[in-house]
Structure formats: C-alpha cells, structure tokens
Length: 242
Image (tube, rainbow, N blue to C red; front, side, top):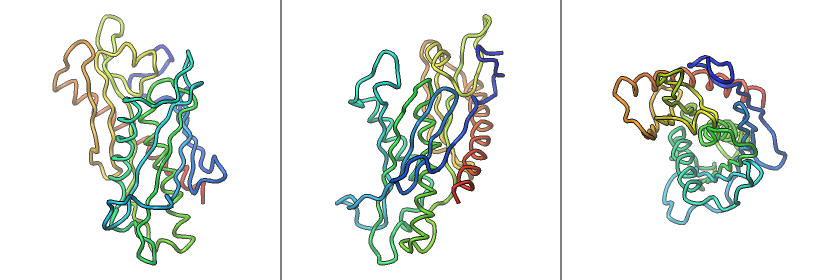
C-alpha cells in the first residue's frame, strides 16, 4: 500500500465538473486527488496567420501563484511552455483539423486554457484530460449554433503519470503520482493515449537509475488501465453537460 492507502495500480479519486465557468464556450474543473485544474475552450477571433486550410487547436497552461507552497510565479517559464505544447499536441491528435471549418468555409481556431489552482503532482496530465472535456463541450455548442455541420472530434484523449518509486526496499511501478511520490521517483513517465488505443506521447525520464524494457512495459500497462478509467470519467462529464 502507498502513503495515501491506494494500491499501486489505483488512480487517485478523479472527478470532472463540466460547465465550471460561465463565459467560455466549453469548460470543466478536473480534480485528481489534491490537484485541481480549470480548463476552458474558446474560439479565437482570428486563426493563426500561417493556417492555409482546416482549423486549429492550441493550448495555454499556467499555474496560479497560490497553487503551490511557497507561492509560485505567474511567468510559466520553460517548463510551462513545454507543457503548453504537450497539451496542444495531445488535443490535436483527437481532432480532424480539416473538418474544423465553419459552415461558411472559414477556419475555426480553438484555444484551451488550463489553469492549475491546486498542484499536487500530475498537473500536465490532468490538464490534458480536463481540456478534452472542455473541447468536446465547445464543439457541441458550435454544432448547436450552426457553425459546425458535424463534429471534427475523432475520439477521446486522456493522460496519466506513472513512475518507479522506492517502496519498502524495492523499486515499484505505481500509477498516478502525487507530489510526494513524484519527487522521490527513480523513473517518471507521462503517457497520453487516444480512446482508439493509440499512444500520442510517452515522456519518460530516469531520475537516478536507468529502467529496463520490462519496467517500461509494466508502466505502460499501468497507464493504459488508468487512462481507460479516465475515459469513463470524461464520458460521464460530457453526458452531464448535455
């Protein structure tokens, strides 16, 4: 058992509250243990100037100063910018961008903002999982408004962290790491998957010891099981928004 009483293959309690904000086209609050992220999806007034066909989906990520102790900075820095790119890539993998065009033929550009209000590990993976819900809600509203003829979404996308953690004299693969485990991890892995089963991204780093192919397979198996559970949480949130 872990410090919080979970088994090695168990997610932290996770919930997604759709429609968390009033003004965004789509929004959701995701809670994964003590990590909480507000995700919104909004249509940009102008698509990127370089876009010559189809639409676009991108992301912004920020950790509010009070999300950590001691107080953080508002500047996202290099880490925050790398996370923005990860979230954007992950969401685009779930969308047929050539179909993100309104009924008049104009490109639609959607930006998903992920603002961490409480950080306890897994903020990037929670942002991806929550932002997908905000994006699907936004797309449904664009269809209801007559701006989209059909949904360009190809399927769900979600993400989770896994790692190899020292535990009672051994190094054990564990799912969904809070900060206390993440900070002690010998290996840290973030996994993004589609509902169709395809891997979007695997970010793995050996923090101290190297890891074997067998350990990588064990971590990916843990991630797949966790992400399947997150897909169910996403589906319930989208259904509740209707």
